[in-house]
Length: 334
Image (tube, rainbow, N blue to C red):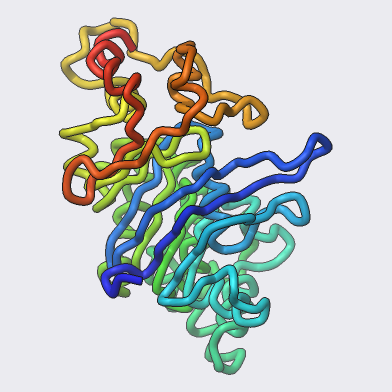
């Protein structure tokens, strides 16, 4: 494992057991998370972003979901080989998770303070009184006014933005080395979204932690991330620095995503650019290039998985010759 990385995911395979057999939702995913950096994972719904994140922290629905291949190396330890008790200490203590929907992440029948102190008591050797004071302090850090009062309230008494801040507080309560944020701003309005992103950046700078940020929003990626992982149909189709992905996108899917972003140059009331079709169902995934499958192409491109090559220093892409050939056509027609 490189000393520059806190996490290395290698050839990750995650499958779900169904009546028809095992279905592969994550198919050989590779990426690294450097220390103190933010890595964004972007792609449409159904591309495997959240399943990849939940695979890292072993929060897949059991017994249907299972990591059936690859390595998840965190601080030099393969998490797949760590025993249950040790993993329980890592998740929540060294790795924090910010879930997508705060109302399902928080228990509606317990006060905010109880949910915060539960995490602190589980992972730190402190008294209940010390844990309670830490809960107040962390609520104050994430920008919740009157934390001494809010700590005694139930989730339904808080606004959506405040609930999301509580979820962030729980994830950061034990000062983890890595935080996985699964679309933390999806259900929030634009103003609160900006506040949450600024809060996460401030906490990252203060604690020196690494972040995996999962989102659909390429604007958030551009503003918040150092590196980008583009996922499509359970695979990584391109990864590199934010600058490379936004200025030199190589894969046709990455180009299509970028061309779908509305800009100020668009003519008023003009039709927005979209990507034809939808992500294939997991039961229909082909062995070969899955973006070619979406575009209705036929032949060998659907039968053989493209190689994953380095096109520039630290800029990797799934090298489908058909997608590369159609790059300019895709850019102009999608």
